[in-house]
Length: 154
Figure 1 (cartoon, rainbow, N blue to C red):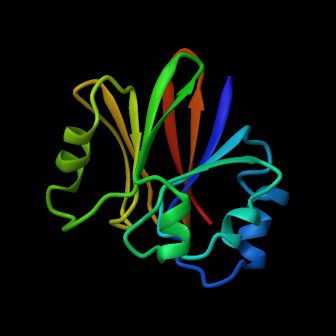
Figure 2: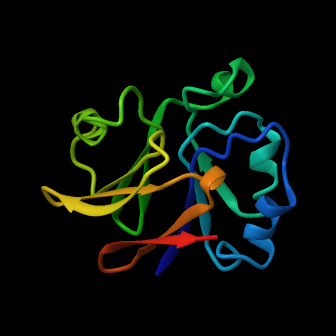
């Protein structure tokens, strides 16, 4: 079994004690890795999530320094499952449809952008949005025989 901490839309200009607590004694303390679905704003925000392995993508609010170092989207293999990671773009209306059309052959898509949580299956694909760290929500994906998501209010 693999547990993945998922967050998005931190929108932090610098790291914060609340972010560091996620991995020290918070909901990410026992995860195997962390996914960040963009709008990181500053790269040192990702450093606060160490020593966990962090996989991240850039968001629309990420400046040139962050955007130059991170891909727009990626697919990560975990326990035989393909999990897509993307921030998202445009209006909330139709967001899930747009991101679903971006990926084929994946088992789950983790995304952000809307600041609204999502944890449901469409056409056999788990669509998972942890909401926004800024608005006090994160998520956990559990991968074993399947992929399950859980939204956590901080």
